[in-house]
Length: 364
Image (cartoon, rainbow, N blue to C red):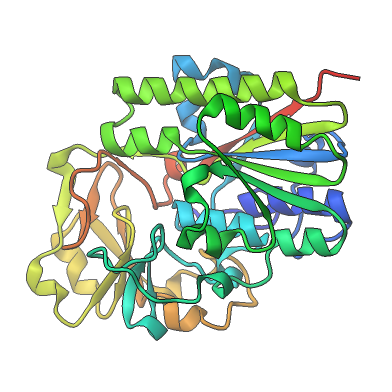
């Protein structure tokens, strides 16, 4: 187990690499030389985010087009969860600097642990909040200020949602209704020089969570992801390139390996994070004695969220420590969804390592 590489081998560095190529500067280091060399020079880029597609998941028979485009691997941010990695992508900063430290996140000014997908309490009530200004300066704002154009291609029903407002301040939003439309739109939008087009592909994550990697639903989702990549690569205009990444991988956890934190332990504590790395606000060492997990205090988590300097709210939002759950297990607090097969958030290779895919235009 190791923290992610934020110095040239991580998701943050992919974003910085593209930002630097488009406008000449970026606040984080670009990719290590070998990874950077795999991405061809281009006038514009499509960055495809395959939610939940870990590198080891490319072994699936339906992932052949994705395996063929694999140029290497990079690390997702810690914890390996969607909103944290998407905030990394949106800001070009590691979590230590952008401040979205976990999927379930203690936000002191609200008085709640916030579920940051929908920005609600853990029991589903909306939390009034200034979503538009939660993150620091975004990649999209820096690109636009330098004369480049950021365009985000998302499911149409995401428009105006709290998470969209958190992540995509300063970008142009383009909604889609099916995946063929999405791939075609991304290829058309990347034609003008000086654009970064971000395409979000959600199917793999949903299927892995709900049904697991041995299901027909998952087979179909992998097929959708492969077809999107193939279609986009075939339609790329001259002068454009596509880069594919993911926000985290998945591990399947059977019901008998999903352990519950005792009800009495919730008194005097807040729980957050994910089921593979549980954030504890309060005393946590004693909890590990009865759970398939090891207690790691915050003082021993140097640089898990990334290097200094840190976000002004880092100390207030970060937990006192975390329960790092054993491989093959999940630990659930009283508001966790105990139905999910696929889990992530931890530091196992299956969760951390995501593929770096590359396609260049075939047109001249």
